[in-house]
Length: 105
Image (cartoon, rainbow, N blue to C red):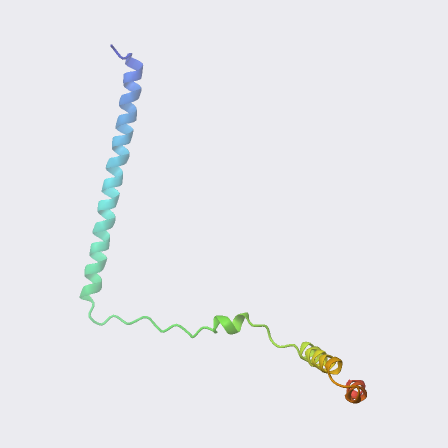
């Protein structure tokens, strides 16, 4: 079985293109490895290279996520506690708690 000449030429062009790409990839990899080896040799030959400066301390991630306390929320929580105490305690303390709440700003 004979392959027509056009198909043979197309196959040869594809094979040459694939071979050229592979060859260039091998050369590029070889050059990069050579460059890395040279840099490593230079680093090993420098006895007194300056160490990297220390990084500034970062804020604690937990403290950065916590919102700042709002005085209004704290006041409302205090009032809720008082109202819970009022509903549980006896009637004698009920009037005093109402007076104390009215006196608050």
